[in-house]
Image (cartoon, helix red, strand yellow):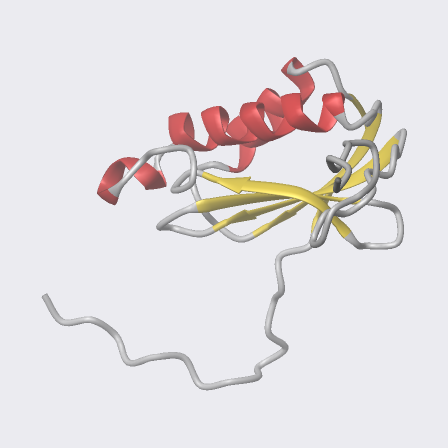
Length: 133
């Protein structure tokens, strides 16, 4: 008789959870969406979320409220992963920048530093032509 397979081992495609007490948070705020990514100190992604994955669609996705809900949900999952302290890196001009930072602080994570890493061109690519309305 064949023995029943018991739990305990890692199955195919399952990864072992690493408990990281300190993490980096990248907030990518565009005009259409806000994406929040938690990484370990080496830069490997632990978990992520966005306003779109939190259930917001269309123009509501680009609001500070959507960014707040999305970052709060991701921060709660990060606390479950054992994250206690974070360094926040904000990128982009979107409306969800401050709301995402406030929500991460409100989830019980200790913010060590906040840095704006928005890429600024040193007269690089030619910008798109001006809109005529």
